[in-house]
Image 1 (spheres, rainbow, N blue to C red):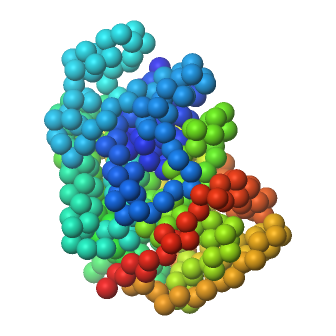
Image 2: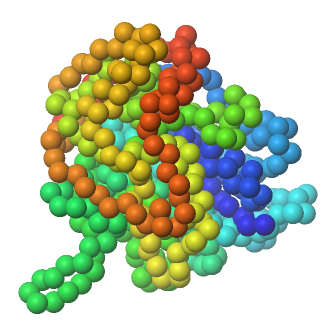
Length: 397
């Protein structure tokens, strides 16, 4: 039985990942400090539906399936907490009643980061939180694995936003360059569009150092915006559904647009709407993590995959949302707002994304049927949606 340690296990992706691996027989431990929940409360962002605490979710999961997800509540920016997760003696003491526990983690899935670009540029305090949380957590993880568990495979969730929107094809993590008659292979040039994206670049650089210096095993997944709520595991009990934000701070664009369509709030397209990104369903995030775990990077390898299934512009997403919304009886309007972000609204975008397919990921696509399914879930909770938290116009400058 393989032991999976999930950092940020209460989050939009973390909790579904925990259930996914637990359902497949893995020994799962999750760690979280409730940063996202607390930030949502502080900022009064609202959620589509109430979500039980992480400990309550684990109990519901156990009652429903008979399987166990172990929970640790704590702040991973504290080095000693991180190191305790890799200390064999402390692990065995903590889980002394569990004879099936398999000890040191074989794989760590690192989600434990402040995940919002708008949050990171709201003001200097939240910029500091973003920088401190993301870099200290990654650094603490790297040193704990270096000192105590070098066999552990680190799977870190990066972002396609690390690359920006260069006027060339975006290769899968690396690029071969010929310069003055000599050749070299380098990390693809990166240019994050927010402080959040820049911290993700720094995370990659930290782990690349660990790979070069100490032969760590790292897979970095450059993920595009995720959409969706339900997974096969959450269908067992609605209380197992993941967090769902629909505001501009923590909500992803497809989830936001569907929520807006359901309540008749004009879809908030920023500027011209030509901003193009790579998207994937939450079920494909789980697949990608699983296939990355099954294949594993080698010692001394930083393996990078571009994690998305198809590309759309903001205008494409708005048009599809309007089409499906109207089919379901919603009056959907599109509003092109003055862009609060500092970004190119029309640009070349052609990223490579074949690596995950080659290791066995089977994509889900944003079909009309998939959109109807997403609308159905949001409509179920329509009465909980608050118009006042949808858009506040957080500006990059």
